[in-house]
Image (cartoon, rainbow, N blue to C red):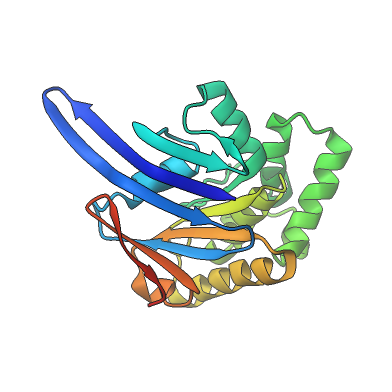
Amino acid sequence: MIELKNVKKTYRMGKITVDALRGISLSVAAGELVAIVGPSGSGKTTLMNIIGCLDVPTSGEYWLEGREVGKLPDNELARLRNQKIGFVFQKFNLLPQLTAWENVQVPLVYAGVKLKERRERSLEALRQVGLAERIHHRPNELSGGQQQRVAIARALVTRPSFLLADEPTGNLDSRAGREIIDLLFELNSTNSTTVIVVTHDLGLARRFPRVISIQDGQVVREGTI
């Protein structure tokens, strides 16, 4: 489903050149559970941005579902992000004035989905994450773990090809963090949802059947921890 071939990313700041990625090749099959780990400055955030179509490679190829997307224009990348990728962020990024139900509907508004279908799909997504009884609560009326569940429902509602989670437990206590990872594993098991988690937490990564370790812009290890 996802394939990167010798992907490099170089940033130029005046006369200084920074090689954030130095020729990464990897693939992720549909239905996989993958953790990408690495210390600060390793290049894992740059890699996540490219996989998530938030950035493009300086060189190399990025293929998503058989289509090379690494050189697409911004408007096409935006469409792919909305249709193919479900993002889960560390800070939840929920709109405080909206209820859980309304927050989950936001990506469907941008996709042009009609109101009746938006409501039905959003309610189903909230049921999948165990929040059917909290749909009318605003973020400040929910715990951190519940807010992250709303964020996961929002990521699921577009029926994406994969979920891309950036430090999804970083703002949660250990119990809530475990529950969120349990939920991601459950979604993978019941719906064959492809899940890619980017994290520096090796304790979290140990639970994943496949771990890709990044250092100095290169893949240095694959397997389990």
